[in-house]
Image 1 (cartoon, rainbow, N blue to C red):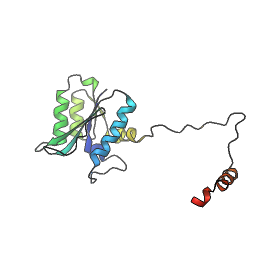
Image 2 (image 1 turned 30 degrees about the vertical axis):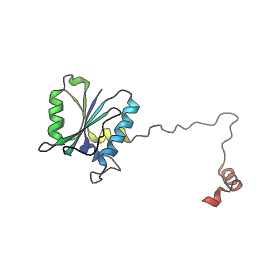
Image 3 (image 1 turned 30 degrees about the horizontal axis):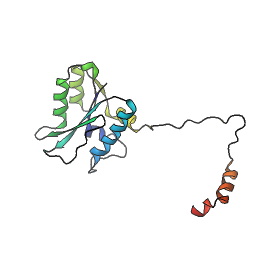
Image 4 (image 1 turned 90 degrees about the vertical axis):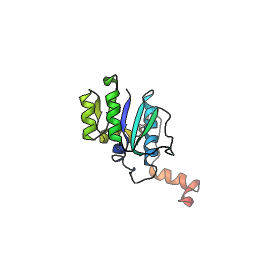
Length: 159
């Protein structure tokens, strides 16, 4: 199911990202590319504000298509225009917390994912650590054994 993403709206919900950063769009796109790679075949279209003709970044690729709204339009105008042009509304989802964009999406029967919810999906660890109990015959090291090995190999000199 393809996603239409309100880029700067999502950046505002991402821990560690800020609209004040000069490469905030590129950082978000890298997270979206990782998301697409995990979801195999998913397509993401992300729209940002403040685009200018000849924008220096070509952030398209790896399942992510980027668009910068050109003045006098803003990202909300562009997102609404795109929502209105979707032919198979049930096939798309819109990521935004903007009321006007979300309202337009709902009016066209396009599912809305609030930006803060989608942000949580983007920052989830890729491979969560799975703890397991020791099997018969396995002997997990105790802390004093680990310290002994560290001393033996001179690791405490580096600490």
